[in-house]
Amino acid sequence: EASLDNIIKCIAKNTLGDINTKIDKFEERCRTTELEMVKQKGVLDKLNDEICNNLNSKLLSLSSSINESKFEIAERNDELKCLISQILSEINPRF
Image (cartoon, rainbow, N blue to C red; front, side):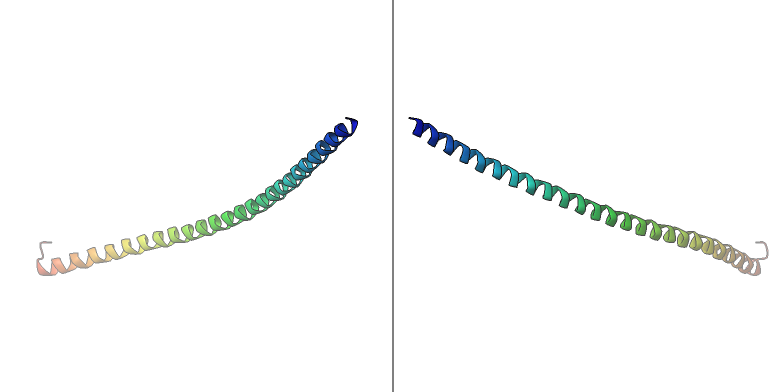
């Protein structure tokens, strides 16, 4: 009976030891995975910042170009109005 009791204790101890070893290995893999995820998040955050900065720069440049174009168009419109007015006054002096 003592022998059977020792066998049961030995099996239980080995089984628990195996389970604990597997749990330890699993926890280590989880820590490694978590570390990799943190690294990847850092890389993604950096990439996102670079993309946002690049887009903001391009948007500012585009906005500046649009404003310049608006100014040029307004100048051309004024010139065209003057030309049309001159042409109309030559055709019909009442204009």
